[in-house]
Amino acid sequence: MHVADILRNKSPRTVAIAWNETVGVAAGLMRASNVGALVVRNAAEAVIGMFSERDVVAVIAERGASGLSSKVSQFISARPLVSCRSQDRLAYVERLMICHQIRHVPVIDNGRLVGVVSKRDIAFASDEAGAVRAA
Image (tube, rainbow, N blue to C red; front, side):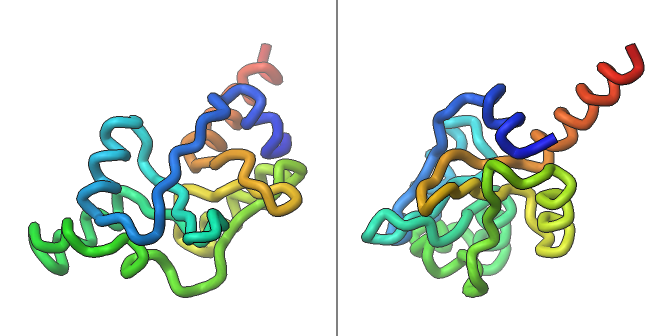
């Protein structure tokens, strides 16, 4: 299976936040959108990272409630963005997630964000594929 197979069955809506927004706004957006991570974009609208529920918890653990007024950009990874393409195999993306200890990967084709794939998406696709093979 490929990432495109997951994206075909998923809502095309991807929730993003500006790099200069606050952690509190990010947490509220995740809650309102029922997502576990947000795509972070810079002023030029380029994808520069992901901001997840784990990041919110880390900010609060480190700074307390005052951390909610901190900027998202302070907490996204400084390392290069980990992303994939829709043509990539799920096994490859799963290895990326394990190696980088992440649960959400933006899918970027030809410089354009086309979606986000999560560990849950991959697990669900693997379960479905197994059920089809067993039938």
